[in-house]
Image 1 (cartoon, protein in one colour):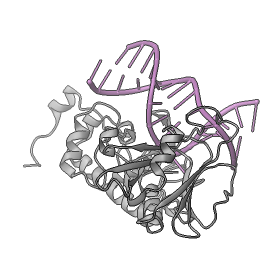
Image 2 (cartoon, rainbow, N blue to C red):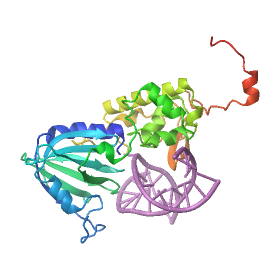
Image 3 (spheres, rainbow, N blue to C red):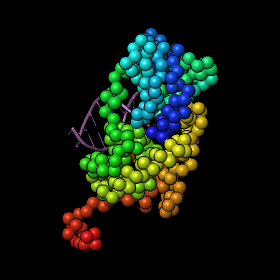
Image 4 (cartoon, rainbow, N blue to C red):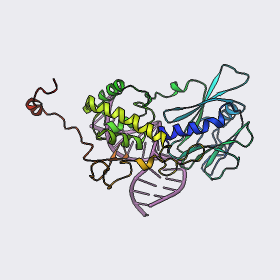
Length: 304
DNA sequence: ACTAATGTTGTAGG
DNA sequence: GCCTACAACATTAG
């Protein structure tokens, strides 16, 4: 569920019900898979339960922000005015973070329930596949992982330089969170289509002009996806339980065998970086590498 | 029964 | 170091 646009929508919708609120309690709900003896009784906790409880309880939520695909809560305690701790939630594939009006969980996949100091407000963490993780940190989240630049903030030039200095396939790079933070399988495919770039093209083989188009496509796609509330392809809802609508605008993702909206060719699916990869074989050509013979016979001029 | 699914991480190998 | 491929994690839906 959660790539940059989905996480952004969750953060925006959850923010008003948690900012300035104090967390008054945490309920951890183990299932059959969770060990009842260990320090981390929950699969979805990557911080020992004790530490987690102590760190979160009676802390005030100062801010909630998105960092790549991570939801970052800035927490502060009354007696420690100048120390911020960070609750970081990564939703994995099927994680949900929702504001609820009851502490009762409504699915067997709810794992954590936070109580807030506002009556009638609880924050639920639910995750069917349990690939998501909640963790607590004392230091700056930026230092925790070496994530790349935010795709909405990076400049064209920096993007072009980064891309063209690499010999990996573009789609692999777009999925690599150290290259850019926040893109996932849906928006990598959609952005590549919009830019007319073949997913298997090598970074170094992408021309400057196409890198510019790709940069633009990424930013436009993400901005529009945020506006449309993200993509609800199976599971996703925002912090208030609302589904997204951007899946209606998907051009290639999961459209295998259907006609391209731009040229009518049939959308193809291939495996790349072990992920289903969708593209239009006509709109997204592999750049043919310029052979020596080709380069020699190329007509000069025209570009001044 | 089989396959694929919004993600990340670790391992093995070229 | 840079690159690829694959398995693992856990569950559901077609």
